Length: 190
Image (cartoon, rainbow, N blue to C red; front, side, top):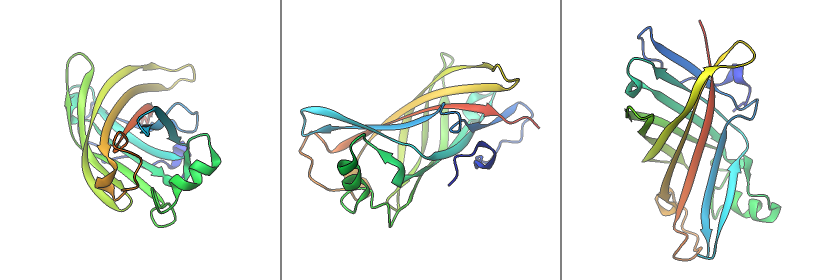
């Protein structure tokens, strides 16, 4: 995968004229895929994926027609500790040599008038695809200083590691991981 904005894959667009297509701004570092999991039940371990790409569509007349797709390079995992990262990239966890990519692709969106919503989708991790649900809020939208137009969202979900073939014993308080997706998209005109 590439993090170049021009090369990012876009999800299938809805054909209505008011549908806007956006590329997630990873090149400008205005997007993040982060995670946290309890460490033995005593503290939170935080990390992120540094390399990912994707896009989304947004229907200004009917926001529930929105779509999103994000591709993640699993080897880009970064928890600010080299030895831990090596373990997390290994066979006990992400097994990045065997499964170098993860993907989230929306299947349905429910949007509320207050700018919050639910995004249902399929998460593929370690070659296993399972449905997950993100709670989402729109952060804002409008023109940027460079003549473009941007729209931003944040979403989060939690899921059990075992569902994706990760059964390393981190203690009973560390069976689920929380994922946080914060994206700023650049509208693609024409």
